[in-house]
Length: 122
Image 1 (cartoon, rainbow, N blue to C red):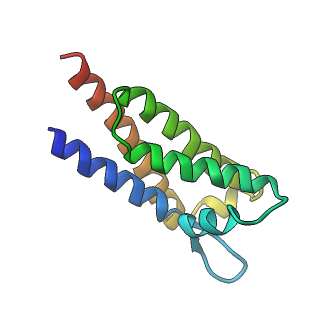
Image 2 (spheres, rainbow, N blue to C red; image 1 turned 180 degrees about the vertical axis):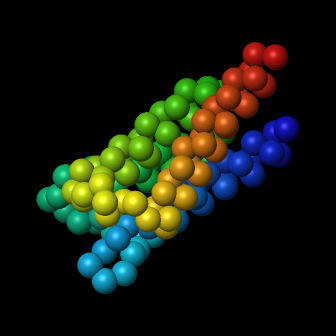
């Protein structure tokens, strides 16, 4: 069960990384947007990109408080996606390269939190 949680956690972070954002010409993976925006000084998106990267790191860190860290990492990662969603129209998000990885991330994170709660309280 522990190995399943480990691989599910990695799968969730990979799904989060491959959320595609539509650009003017081509879509880019979310991880690339996060990586470049962290170094874009003087922009509010820098804060959200940093929170997304911190959420990814917290998601992979082992801790005594795994459920709390999972909830915190999901919240930080969702704020990074939500900040990008404020700048585009809803029609621009209705494509499989965004919806499939995004909902895969949401479902796997919810499943991870439920499994961690079951292991903590048998």
